[in-house]
Length: 581
Image (cartoon, rainbow, N blue to C red; front, side, top):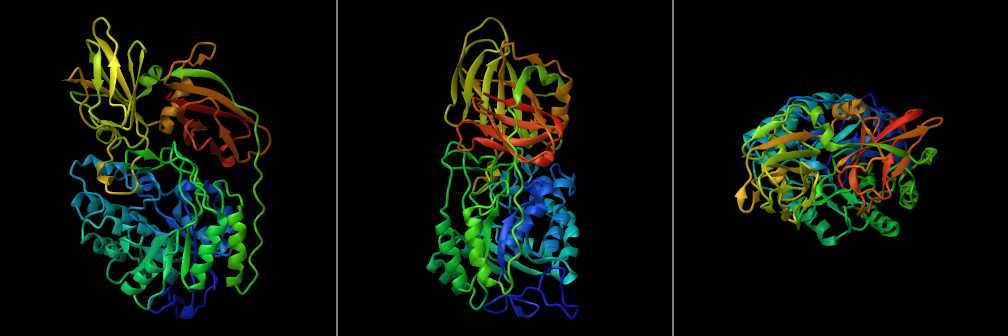
């Protein structure tokens, strides 16, 4: 039985009332794979799903990122790249069931675990609890989201066979009323399919809720963990909701590789034991824009732009050895021959982009909406623009009358380029470097701190502490600096478009950092996927045709940015690189 090919008699959805799942009363094993619509260019959605189906999987799992769907409080978007309904219907069209994971917290190495930054405008905010400010916001989001997906449930003829209640809450478990609240928030808005939770071994102790199936997450099969799941949930089907088929990368770290042979050995054993499985990730995709998350300990360590994850299907949708081994294994769990593998997309190596113009950041400040003045610095989220600033950079400017020792008091989140108005570069303040020497000068001078938000933590106990920018006072010679002018540099498309009308300087002039650099990519023929390599560049962000490809940083391990063909035009394509250092 497949989505769209249903019995017309009385339906019975996915059930977990015995030691194995049943669908329409018949034994059913979930062979799932995670692929997130928000990490895949929309034009490639169907390709990735067809490759999933051809691998022998029968179920798609996807998170729903609240922070993309409600970027400003009360401003919802479910169109274009975020058209979840289209994505779910495509899954049904290619023959995949769906397990929907609506959060509201998703982790997923995604900025703030998918929670919108504007929640942090409330200084008392307690995320993932029944704190009224959070609970009310969740209710508003679910009002919009569930309205769109309820009709796509199995019992209404759609592909959704199960819905996850929150995500990994056993790792937090700070409010015993919270999980019942989320469960009821789903049920009261029309969710009728099987509900489940998802936790690691330790989280199983605290993350469940009555009447909801517990599932487990891991990479290495631990018999004790399975025995524990059996003990707390006897005579129920076992689902590995996240079998980690690879791992994520951090800036300045090594690239993670999980051997294909080790992956397939574990998957083989999971299936031999009669369990269901979901591969996280089957296809990772890309953290486009500023959406990469971070880890909090020992100090902030940011995720790279690529979410390749060493998954069976690569970042750009290529088949890997893992894919071929997995397809061979899963073919033994189907009575019919698997569909043919879709033909791989052509990629193209374009001629080098010639960067020919630059524009100092300071020359663009006049394009920014009215800067905000305050006696003390405000964090990004509390700037009075668009319900606060969520991503990008904030420029803090104040006057000083002497040189001396500048101390951040560990209030920089996350990295600040410090300079004087006469463009004297002083240095960088971050978690490790909290003091800089300001050179002496005559009279009153403007001190500038360009603060970069490197990504909000997506997992752990520090979610409530993810305000960015300057989160407190800074001092010069032990005296508080006061009277700041603050500029929001969130690098949204409207601002990037405005740059076109500015007087760009030829690179025959010595460029000024930080700044913008402009070049052209010429595409002959049909635009194809490619990669952008930036040898000799330091750190920044790349835009092409208004699309933010994501962050780049020479420290690696990521050395290229994925450049989707659907985002290119035949002929001239404008590329702008924002380079911080």
